[in-house]
Length: 506
Image 1 (tube, rainbow, N blue to C red):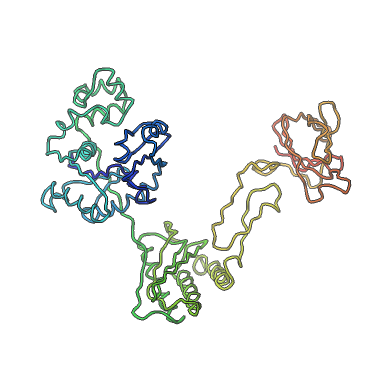
Image 2 (image 1 turned 120 degrees about the horizontal axis):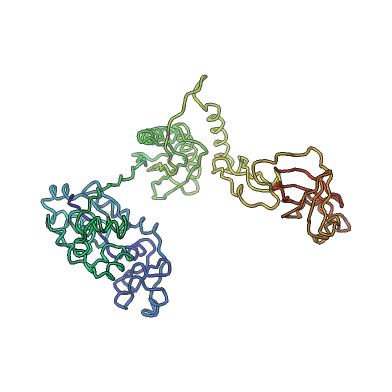
């Protein structure tokens, strides 16, 4: 069994809300999930608010309770600096959940002169760097070390089973199993661990068998250390502030090569670039450039040079020389490499075109160059949406249930000329459309040539074009989608009282 250190920060959802959103943790605060209390502040517990209470009952016990919704993203963002502070002392930290992490005890214990000294060093590091209260527990296995952290104790080697023996069965974190075991007269982990393992597996299942091993102090799950995020930003501080365009171009090329080499060394490529500049007067400038493909060295240098040119041209407006530059690769993807072309590098023409279009955008603005995106809609003319070059070309509604749209794939039969048809209601009368979009009757059947089919579902009418009505208000052209009993779909048009079929989907 591996001696494990678990670092636990009490009431972390409440502490994270204070760090990120500024809610006072010294006031009665409760974080709720699924309308039940998930975490509380010490002031809220003093008012009788406990985990598991419903929102109304918690507010009844503490009328001035500050109620917050559970936000796992907020908890993780606030806990990231804590992980960073621990990794400064010892590598190989495993993230358990926001507010708790684990690491092997052997390395820190040998380096700092014992497990107690290592635990004290970690708690002091978190308090100084993050101003957060933390508790440390050490035992054999992550499960026992986590319980030791909540109790704030360091279990001696070989004493893990004795430490777990008198703990309640609820410490397993399995409410359903704990309730069943209590009804069977088993109340402590020692009593549960005394049961034969095969009988536990046969009676309660696989998850209960794993809990049985934990109750006996036999946690053999190996630690999975997290990999700290790679710092990809590159920064350059100038002894002499950059005030000329030629000096900016030279600095841009050197900084672009550094960023590209750092990305390439990690097998990554950049699609969105943040440019941050600090002037001599302390003014901070930030601009993000988006690219539809992968940013090469030349592409990064061009964007940086154009951006610096724009900032320096505003020198008369209060922007002084650039004293510090920072490139931030915000959109990072794995770079698998490109196969060179037979006559030159792959995508040379495309890269030159992209550089020209990006240069036009730098001169005239991002909306000066637009590209088409196929979007959702009934007619082809309404499915084209223009977006600025470099923005994400993502369709917004191609899978939406557009009224009148035939399902994919495309119709099996499309008639170059409308095919005469006749749609009748239950009385055998031809269906008409009034000037108020009212049907003379519900479509019941359709006859195409000599073939007559029953209509089981229909949708419409919709306008075919802008000639939707004439001067007298009568409907001129209307489109319907008809579902037939033989599972075919028909796209039909009613024009001046005459029915035609435009497409037949098999």
